[in-house]
Amino acid sequence: MSDVRLYVAIYADADFRGTVVAQIRLHGYDVVYAPELGHSHWKDEQHLVYAAADNRALLTHNAKDFEPLYRAWWEAGWKHSGIIVAPQ
Image 1 (cartoon, one colour):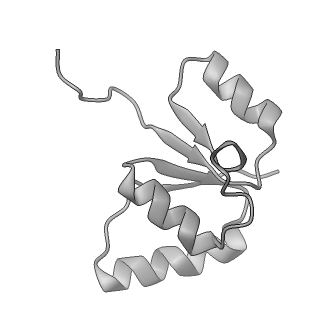
Image 2: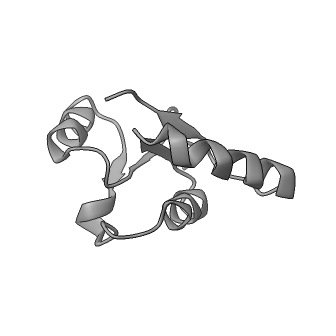
C-alpha cells in the first residue's frame, strides 16, 4: 500500500481550541495541534515552517498575519501545503 494521502493533513496552530481539533479528529482527519506539540508560543512563521516541513496545511483563524506570510513565501518561491483560514 502506498503512503499517498487521500485528503489534506492539517497542522492547527495555537489560535484553535482543542475542542475543535478533537472534532476534526473525530471525523477521521489527520490533524496535529500546536499546543500538543509544545508550539504554543511560536511565531506565525515558525508554524508555517513546521507545517510545510511535515507536508501539512496550516489551519488558523489569523488571516491578518498569515496573508502577508503567504505573499512573502509566494514571492520567494517557497513551497508549503496551504494555509486554511477559518473565521472564528
